[in-house]
Image (cartoon, rainbow, N blue to C red):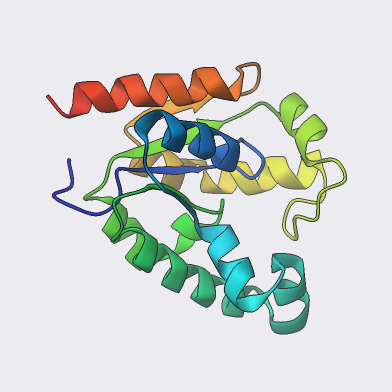
Length: 169
């Protein structure tokens, strides 16, 4: 379903799948702002690993929900954190938006998440469990899925832009 306002497109998917990088490149192609909801939360409340450690996941998810609700109102490319789709209100909100899911293989995850500070995906095995649990939600919400394992983010962004062009006709 196409939206009558708000976000131009919403990018969801697995942690480390390239949502922010693809979102930046897509925003440039579309000459639109990018709203990365993880960055919004960090700017307002501090680093995500610290929020998890100090206040717990529920506190973080509440802050994340606020950031997502506000971002979806803006005419922008919006990227969501991997777990944002766990919120039922967010899922309901996404029904009226164009949603793209980015995926990647476990091998790609092993390379991309090594050395990062992801509180729920510290290694490829944790990442795989997390993604398998969320996959049905990602699949339900998205109209386009792109595997970023071996694709340059410029190509991913171009693919999304091309798809958006077909959605507006």
